[in-house]
Amino acid sequence: MRISRIVIAALAAHLIPVVAWAAFKPVRVLAPELLGLHCANSGVCVDDVQRLVEAERLRRDAVAFVSSKVGKIDHLPRTIFCSTMACSKAFGFTSNGGYNVGTFGTAISYRGWKPYFVRHELIHHLQNERLGTLNAWLLKPKWWTEGMAYSLSEDPRSPLAQPLQGWRDAFEQWRVSIGEKNIWLAAQSLNEYQDGGTLKPSLVNHAGDQAAH
Ligand SMILES: [Zn+2]
Figure 1: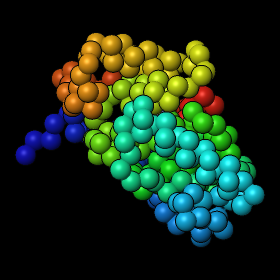
Figure 2: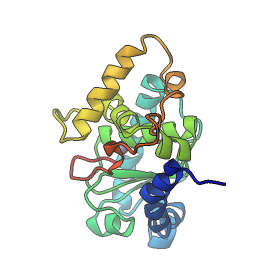
Figure 3: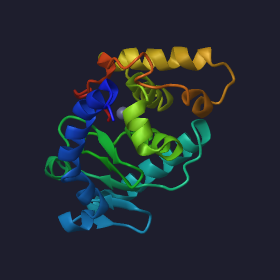
Figure 4: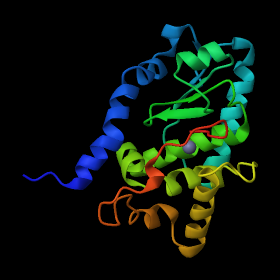
């Protein structure tokens, strides 16, 4: 069977980083106790127990915000809050504020203790719940997944660094264009490869200190 250009491009663009990434981060997010973190019954884990109440409040507020403004979250992810650079490094952070491991867990770096960062990551979690992690990550355009997270988290930074601002603008224009249609239904027709198999430049991962994901 002939392997299409699309599949080869997808492999090159995604699977190699996936393998490298899969080698360490998920294990740590799934078993943070192994790194000495304290995990409360709420599903919030911290490296500094003095900040547990603050972390739990940040997540509780973000869950309420996302559930009412974006969509109901079915299963809360275990949420790790790192207070220190050392903890953040152990979870693979560089300059970003947070990331998700599928629908299993969310990690917030020492830079990410802000309501809009936690909301941003929970929106990605919701995308993974509603669309499936692989579908959301591989097939949905970055302007949609990231633009939605930056827009609907009500990230106060304006303008964001490019390409993040462009993605937020594109999502907000798309949202106007679909009218009253449900955003999850309208998103079903979006596909990163819909233009005939040419990889779009938006596949390039974003980085920098403004990035939450
Ligand atoms: Zn993001």
